Image 1 (cartoon, rainbow, N blue to C red):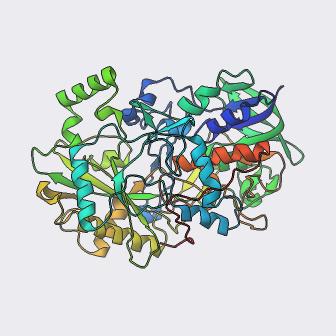
Image 2 (tube, rainbow, N blue to C red):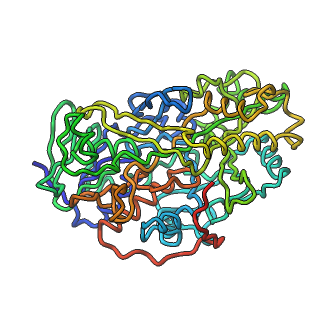
Image 3 (cartoon, rainbow, N blue to C red):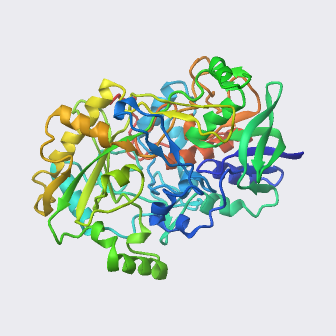
Length: 555
């Protein structure tokens, strides 16, 4: 039986970071298991290649949710990365840390060591910031953080429209102040996607003390009594057991991590027995507390002749864009799908924003977009997607059987609470208000979706239920919390309660969804987890440059 000091399950945003940091000491032997293949396809590395990987069954888990009552009993497609780099190899590449108040909220819930000033050094450690040693940013880390290399002319008009409404333009959302509008920062360098496989793992993969095994589907965590001491996985039809002398670290993500815990006998005992799984630890919080950003888009058709990605993404302009990318690695194909982001409050009494916009000068066929495929309308246009940043609704992820190859049951419970319904309706009204009478108005021919006839709150809520979908930010299913919290799966040092030698390190550990995109926080979690595993002292806390340390505000 193979033996290693550490076994990491999942080579995604956090797992690749852990593999790098734990193997930096040549005394540590590390095994990294990944269910998907290596990241060799050129579509991984071309930023707009995500349009291909979203459809792939080779590089993508292609999860589907259960019929969701809050959204017309629709089944939502949830793509998650299945390759080296995980979802960082197929995502929109936006680098967004969230609001410092999010992390202070975690600390207030008992997650000591996870406050805003505690975790900022880990963001900085990862980072190679384009503008150098500015306050709150890091230089020389594995992860390039860059400004967009290409800005569409209508993106500039859109930012002017937000500013006309009263939202301040911001050059950097990652310093503590969020409310405002600006261009996204990206994990893209010289026109290429910088996944954690292309950064953290690339720097470490030739180390003799790190072994990476791809196409290896984990079946269960092995235990000696209540101590995790190995992993069973399948590769090319062969079952393999390997031993962990020190720790097993589960970094499979918000869907796969709770699934594997349940397959290994850790979860609600009654539920496990109904699936034919022998319980080891009765831990009812496993798979609960699922949260996601539910995105609803309003789209407008532009006046004919207005610049739009719709016209750039077909025919001869598309050929030119592809040629430009392959010869110079710049232009349209070298940037992410969302060009502009904005944060706003739907109620003036809120301390900080409760909604986020993602906008791009393009419109997509509605049915195709909801199936996560990109089919552009022939006419030019623009779409503003908006989400509730801190939803109150909670869903779940649970094993459907004892078979590791069976996808788990995902119940998102979107718009399950009145507060979420009210906030998304206010957000849609606000979206229209921003566009009305703005610098964008002369370019608009008509509102495409939901259309001028949808006016009332009931109309807009129905539109949200019928058309909204995931923003690809699921978190929370292995939440950390106080040791005496019966709903917490982990203690704040990321150890699974009730067993020894087992931790979880990925977005599933978040007790509450952060106010923004989740890839940068997942990488931060991997950085902090490495220190916890190695027993390193925490870095000196660093205040966020804007000095924003607010109590968690409910939106």
